[in-house]
Length: 457
Ligand code: FUL
Image 1 (cartoon, rainbow, N blue to C red):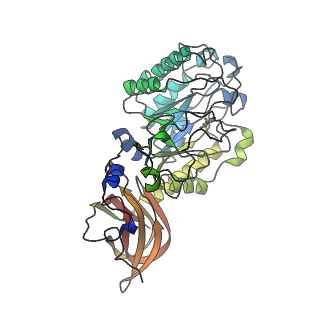
Image 2 (image 1 turned 120 degrees about the horizontal axis):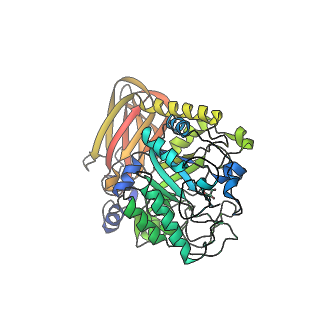
Image 3 (image 1 turned 90 degrees about the vertical axis):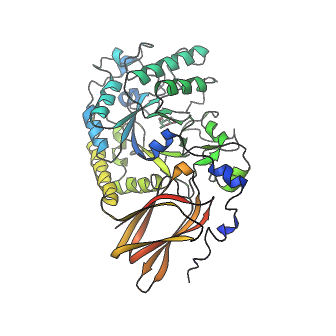
């Protein structure tokens, strides 16, 4: 028999419901920018540049601008194809580690205007995003294998000058992606992060700064995996996790800090209690549709299926993370038809969840009088997806919950047990006939505040 009398209002699984320590955790809440991103949680990466022309994942630093032999791109096709997947924004690799700039920068000749390509690729893509109602963001690699000032204080000027160009000439920027990757043979060099952040805040106050930045953390892998409990309130030292280690995709072991973005538990009470400073730092899942980040014909057989991508969507967007899906255009300047087909199918799958809810209920703060909430359907339904959204402006509070279906004769059956919720939890059930459902919160930091819960068939 289901025991509904043991819930957060009664025993809270033995954890304090409200004490100073709990108040310390729930006092940590997102910025306006972080809330905005949580409401548009799926966007795309475009890796395109010198490596597309030379068919590499990482350049060498010895390329010449004329090695970029690509003569045209179809930015309209890039944006419309990505839009068909349901993504709402695009982050372009304006400069990858090789240092080649896809815009007409005045600070180096190693850029698109010296390559024989007619146009400014950052302009082309950002304008198309604007035309098609998509957000636009920039990736600018701090590690630069080509720039000769790299490793000296002048490089910080160079980097900030380039940031200024990107953040003033291309409209509104929704996210700035600072990559921590660095080759193991790169010179030791401290980037002036604070100055980089100040530049972004000054020129694009609505942009979130990701990875080596204070707004969005790296989920810790590039394979689309997330944790059982993905927390947004985490210890402040995690803000530096990506920038203090010399890491690369070839050398990913970190021993420099005692908390890393790869740890399984980043935000339980046990972890938080040991840290004086806490921050709101939600995770982003970056994953490529193919094996590599840049296009290579040999990867054509590695394009993930729409079902795999949909599972990644459910595990990221549906697990308190944002999803940054990489789609690398080919050396012909288009998104490959194989990728395009999969993206369209993914868009359909995502729409199929949301298009016809059986029931949407706004809830608000739950009171202590009753430890659970009931939902009644108009008739017998076969529920397949449930989406629960916590009001993250009140922090992330729920730590454990159960879901029951209600059948004829008020018979309840547990169908799901979960831990944290946060910005969005999407639960996928094997569809079971029921007349209603019951949500039981088992453990929470103070009273839960649920924005909404939606049921889909
Ligand atoms: C990594 C880089 O080294 C890869 O080339 C890619 O850009 C990925 C998103 O981040 O750190």
